[in-house]
Amino acid sequence: MEVYNNLFRFRFCVACRRLVSRCRLVRIIRDYNYGIVLDHGIGRSAYLCYHHTCIMEAYHRKRLQRSLRCQIPDSLYSTLEQRLQRNCCRL
Image 1 (cartoon, one colour):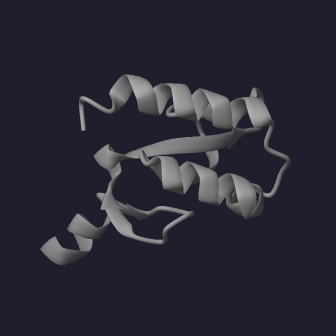
Image 2: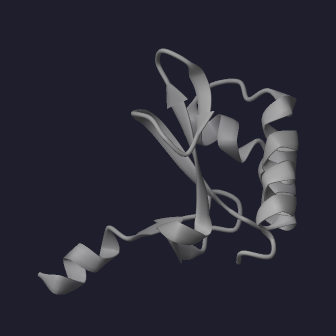
């Protein structure tokens, strides 16, 4: 049962498809009230690594659009890039 519980702490990055701890991923949610939000909310979600290559892969191959089943504004990718710049020292 312990192995099963540990699996809940890991998620797949939609870009690189690696299994990573949730604390090392950013969560993007399609919230039914507010649209696309980062980190908090209830709804369909996708996870991305805090890497420039994963953000660009998700953008060019439309991985977030496929995972969340909706249009993703370009402003979200610029927000992710800014967050990556702020948090690069933390990781």
